[in-house]
Image 1 (cartoon, helix red, strand yellow):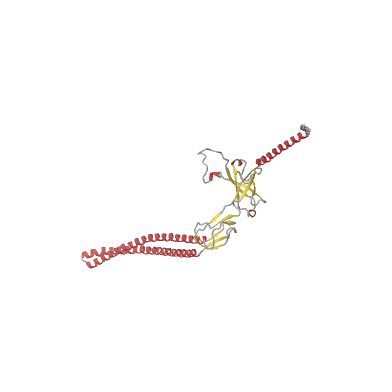
Image 2: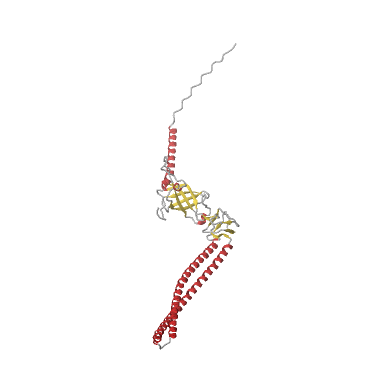
Length: 368
């Protein structure tokens, strides 16, 4: 005989949640107000600095790097610097074989001496020609006097010979003497004219000699310059970079040997054109270099480039074609360090930089 168990009692209905208390409602309102206040504070914190300063991370360290290239060909006989070597202004960096250039200087000096001697010879001939002209000119009065006397003799002996008081032979003799005197006068006058024309020739030769002396001096100066070009020295204080040359290399004029990185660098910061409204030359700049985060550098605005970066790109934009989309452009701003050069030794061109321009500082180095 089976027995049936009684059915289970029904489960009680869930109790309704109690009405929210006033303290919980106040807590939620306080949380909402705190969040709103935090949002406002963050907005103010983000907005207020932009009123007093402009910041960009599109900046980098720059320097006036100079590429060292020889002016004369030859073998590098001595290299006084190595990779990343520091140097002072005027310090010799390398030397090219000087033997050929010393011989060229000696040859140019000899050619100049030869040209000077040739010029002195022409000058002596010109001085001598002056005496020759004076001698020829001095002979003319005597020739004219003797010709006059010979003519007078003919005048005297002519009537005598015609009257029978003198011999015809004597008359012919004085007539011949008059002809000889006339010929002598003509010859001396021609010699004087020749001597005078020779003076013009010698003066022309003297001018040519002066020009040759000047040319030889120029060649000597060039030879000495070429000799000086065999020694390449530093233009400023800096560091060696990108060294390609080695001792013993044969180098050609214009060939890149190494680069001189100056010790004094600066910053190029590309600010948006919308940030330039309150920027002025001389305003203080705070500089943060990524490679040395523990040091805060100070500088000032030196100048603004007259043109955006895109304007000087290899392929500048042409807004007159196609659809136009306005893009905020960036303008390079040059910033100089106020730090002494000794503090900039860890900075190298190309390093990333963050700059902050303070609008509250008054320009002290000129206007915009």
